[in-house]
Image (cartoon, rainbow, N blue to C red; front, side, top):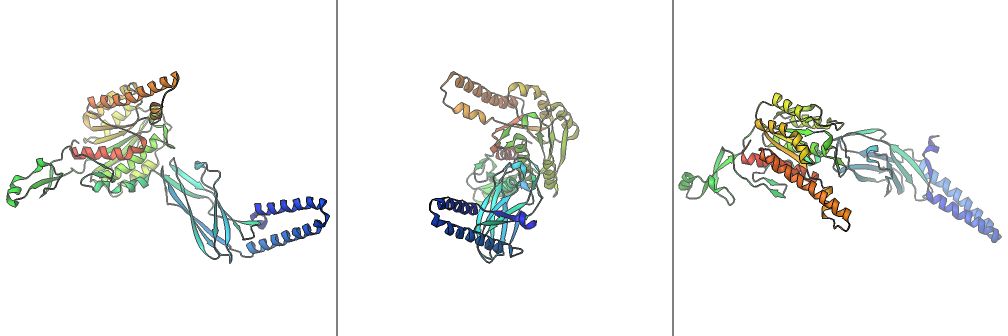
Length: 443
C-alpha cells in the first residue's frame, strides 16, 4: 500500500502513451504498422518496470531537510533552505512541493532541480510574513525521477514544523550600529544636524573641521598652541517609553502589513538603539485599556522582554481611549520621560478630540506623536486629471494631505513634537527624532 501511495506516473509517460494510441489509429490505415506498435507497447512496459526498479531498489534513495530560522522576522524576507542528499548511483530530477503555512496563501509552490549521482545540493526560497504568530509548515514533498522520466517516487519529510513570527529583528540588526555613531550618521544615508549639546563634559580634544566653535577651550588652546575644544556626551539613564496605539486607526494596511505592525517593528529597533545609548527603554500598548506594559529599565534582559511583549500584542482594533492613556501615564510614570506615541490622525477633528489628553501628557513629559501620511493619496494627487470626477478626487486628496500638515502645526503650538512619516520610513525617522532630542538635550 505504501508503495502504491508513493508511485506517480509522470507527464512523459502519458505523452508516450498518447503517441502509441495515435500509432494504433494509424495502424487501421496502414495494417503493416500494427505489430510494430505492439512492440512499442512492450518496450514501454519494459522501461516502466525498469524505472520502478531503479527508484525503489534503494530503500533510502533521497534524504531531505527543511532548514528554517529559529523565528521568522515580520515584514522581511526570511530565507528557507532545503538540503537534499542523493543516495542513488545515477543523476535524478526532483520536483519539490513544500506545504507552506496557510498565512502565505501560496498554492502553486514548485521547485525543479537536477542532482548528480551521490551528491548533495541546497535549494532556497524566501518567505515574507505579514502578521505575527505561529506558522505551521506541512510536509516537505519531493518527487524523484530517474533519467527514464516515466514515473516519480514521492518522499515526505518534516511534517508539522512550527516557526513563530516575531517583530522585525532583521531591521534590528540592520540599524544596530546606529547607536555608536558619534557623528550620528544614519546607516550611511542621512546625517542628523546637532542643534545643541548637553552639558555632560567628557574630554578636551583637538579641533577638527565640523566641531562647534562655541565649545572652544581658550585656556587649553593657549597652552597647546593649537585649537582645542570641549567634547560633551549625551546624558544617560533617561527613560524612554514607546506607547503603541493598537486601536482602529492602526488597522490600515500598507504593503501587506498593518500600521500597527509597522509601529511594533519600529519600537523593537528603537528600543535597541535606546539601550545602546545607555538610556532606559520601556513600552506599553493601549486601546480600550493600557496593557503589554514593560517598565523602562536598562538590563541585559530588557531587549528579550520587549521582544516577547511585542510578539504578544493582540488587538481587535477597537476605538482607542486616550483618557485612560492619560490617567495611566500620570499614575505609573512619575519621572519625566520621553514618550513616543505611535498612532494615526487623518483629520483635524480626530486630533481635536484627543488633544486635551495629549496636552495633559505633554505637561509632565516630552511627548512625540508619530503618525502616518497616506501614501495612497500621492498617486491621486500626481495623476493627470482628464474628467470632472478626477478633478474632484484630486482636490479631496490634497485637502487630506493638507490636514496632515495642519496637525503637525497644531501639535507644535502646544510644545508637542511630531513625526509625519511614510510607513516604509517609520523606523529611520523615529530613530532620527530620538537622536535629535538627545543631541539637543531637551529631555
